[in-house]
Amino acid sequence: MRVREITEKLDQLIPLRPFTDVKSTTSAANSITTILNPQDTYCRGDQLDILLEVKDHLGRRKEYGGDFLRARMSSPSLKAGASGKVTDFNNGTYLVSFTLFWEGGVSLSVLFMHPSEGASALWRARKETGDIIIFQGKFVNGTSQVLSECGLTLNSTAELCKYLFGGDHEVFYCMKPQHMPCEALTHVSTRNRKSSYLTVKEKSLFHKSKVAVEIMKDFKHIEVSQCNSKSNKIKGKCQVGLKSPFPGGYVLQDRWIPTFCNQIQLDTMKINDCLKGKLIYLLGDSTLRQWTDYLPKVLKTLKFFDLHGTGSFQKRLLLDAERHTQIQWKKHSYPFFTVNLYSVVDDSYIPLEIDRVFGDQNTAIVITFGHHFRPFPIDIFIRRAIRIRKAIERLFLRSPATKVIIKTENIREMPMERQWFDEFHGYIQYLTLKDIFKDLNVGVIDAWDMTIAYNANMLHPPDVVIRNQIDMFLNYIC
Image (cartoon, rainbow, N blue to C red; front, side):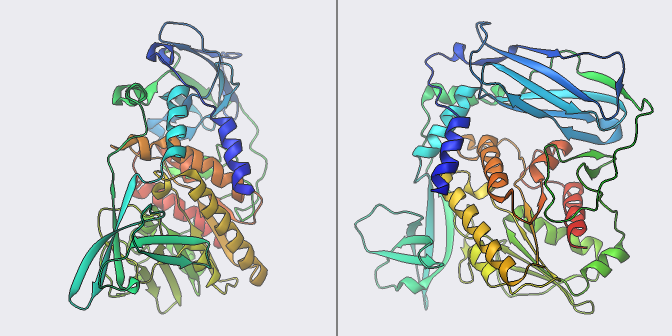
């Protein structure tokens, strides 16, 4: 029922917009932006609102919303940036709101990512897809090896190997190879089927020249003054359970500054003291694995422990034996998209991993998932998120003191397979994740908001972003 409720809510957010002529879709060039209540002087802390009226390629005003937009303000000389908030009135007009967090010269930007017709096409295609990603399993029996097709679902009359995880909640299938037991599955890889659920006309909406086009042609630059504005009201320390607004922070001098809590800058000594005796589980994809690459650069006493695995996706373990600190990264299970074979011998789903944690005040779990779910039907993502939530609830019953932090997925570069890995899918998952975890006593690292602010358009953000994500995490657990 919860899956259906969320899916119906998304259907209302992204209504079906069939179209017959590209000229009737939204045009960034013809759309008009107007500053509401323009000021001679803008003060730090003020909100600046812009009305956006979208028109089609013939100059006619659109009568419905649903365009996929991204707003950002920045000051490159100050190494500063922040997300803007977009409100859709569903009638062809949008309110774009910026909070002027810092003083100095500020540039404003509204990127036109996709027209509503394009967003609608992506949403329709995602609901229709089911077999766009091909899984290939490697079965090993002594010196014999054989490859076989696998998947989350398999339409075949052939004999299947059925792998159940957590009762019957999660299922994975493989075509059973001849003369091989199902238990012989050791590795899996994936590839794209190279098919499409979009029409030729729909595909034309996603040409590189039509994606992420700047709408703000005028008044891109404003000056923000201090204006003797009163200092912000005193905020409490960053801790789990706090609600993170959007935008939930901004970047200034390359440092992420949350707007809803007071983040303390920790030096190496304080970080070492904080991590003493800590048991930390990092569960998710390679954007969280980046933490294990970064941490030993800062904390020289953290050393990799050789677990004798092979490949990029093997479990990772960092140890500081003297301080009894252990940090473990483990990838989430299917769906996991990579052309490289990865071991499934110790594979496990995040809910099952959480169920194995006893938990105490020195235990912390960080969870992220999203990028690998983009090419799959949305209900797979929703079900996984709900099961993770239920596992966290079970953890809190036996150990309320355990800290759990959810890191949302981040923005990325324009993918080659745009239909399946497009930012639109990531944004829908981002909204869904925030909805499912909104009233749970967890901390949130809003990587979506953060990477927009940093303008980090890459699947694996640079070290400056990773450092600030870890700073936020340490504030939650220290």
